[in-house]
Image (cartoon, rainbow, N blue to C red):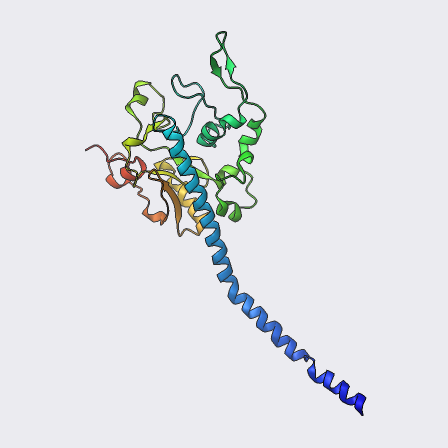
Length: 271
């Protein structure tokens, strides 16, 4: 009789199959309810990381400019400018990685420059880094990476699609015209020419590392891929980085539309 009572107590203290099913259902329900919240928090963390990276890039750009006559780096350097610093576009396709490789990583990935008989540098020599630069593998994990882009596109092999683009539409200096540059917009630009609060410097872009007003579709594409079309992240010469509605980006003619000119060129249009 004593043994039977002990066994009964053990049986009474155990979960029945129905009770276990109820517990599992409750856990599953709680998990389903919390998943959207967790996903939202994860997305917010990725966006914050991206903003921090872009903030560092912007500050570093301003520091670079302070060390180079208060001029912003050019969106692209060909390597043969007459009186501009000697840089090299490590990416061979002529489109992507321009300001990144030409300014930021030139000293890291460039071999000793070629010199003439008098010891003057004539042209840089590109080494094994060229292959890396073709797809941007040398920049993965750096502050130039848009974390939310890499998370949303984990299979993307062209790293430049997961990065930021420099606004090449910022108004060029008259000196660029006097130099007879084929594209004055691809030149160094004096910071004092721009309104720091409204002159956009960098922005999310799904393709190139250099963007102009006519490439607005690539910005919209990045917004859809990374933020479900709800926002886009941009940095301004004043140093602030902000989230903005992509529909708020002016799409008028930058030569005649005042708002578009302020955003893309950084100054008021000529009247």
